[in-house]
Amino acid sequence: MDARKLESIDSVQAAFAAERYVADRDLATAVYLSLTLDRPLLIEGEAGVGKTEVGRTLAAVLQTELIRLQCYEGLDVNTAVYEWDYPRQMLEIRLLEARGEAKSAATRDIFSEEFLIRRPLLRALGPKAVAPVLLIDEVDRADEEFEAFLLELLSDFAVTIPEIGTLRAERPPRVVLTSNRTREVHDALKRRCLYHWIDYPTAERELAILHARLPRTPETLGREVVDFVQRLRSADLTKVPGVAETLDWAAALVALGTQQLTPEQVDQTLGVLLKYQEDVVTTRGPAVRTILDESRAFRRG
Image (tube, rainbow, N blue to C red; front, side, top):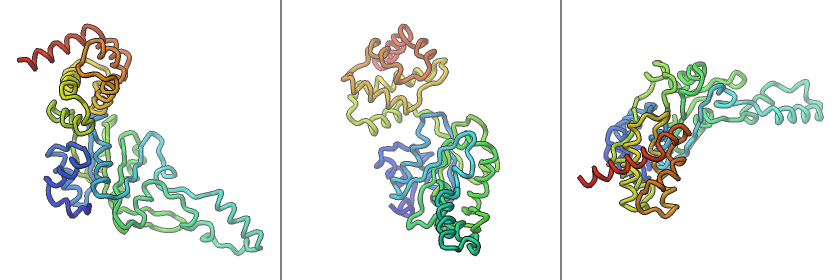
């Protein structure tokens, strides 16, 4: 699908829904404006709420390549942008020596695009028939020095390589950045982007997400799973479950043939939903029974 065919917020919502991503109106608006204004979109939110999936879904909707850069502490230019293929360069030097041309060989003979290894950011700037989607995932995990490099890239969509010169994108990529907010992203980077926060969904929307992703989930089980997770998010836990954990748990319960939640079944599968032993211990047993009782009393009422 051409980005020009996403001519409205409604069309963005519909296109995302066709790819089984339930986007609310606010997110669809942010995506629409990012496409229309050719601006990067920075998405923040808790882990597991669907930030990365926005980039994946956008690439699927636009029927274009997804180029993903996973950020982490210590990420540098060699890993993210480019590096030279030293083994091939050495082989080329040996071949030049064998032909007696090593002394007359110019730098351009071994420092040319032929010997350049394109990492994700440089690949996103390369010649493409259709602009790719560049997903810069968890940018808050990268060092501030790398974040500063992104400022130049997102401003000009160009990279300067000393031995070659400046390589500029003919078709700038559609850029989605995500952040779990483990640290604040610099204001200068935020100013270059449109901004959107994805919160935990309402029960109604989470159920819609569950049915979109796992359509074989029994109706009663789906409602009980969503009700349980929604109530669990208000508990004092080290890490409350995100939508990703809701989907994992529902898939596990379906695989076990579960039609309706029981305290025993919840206790046995808490490790799918919660990722810290302290949270599992706190929730297991009486707390599980209380949440199930409250949830069922609420639905009956």
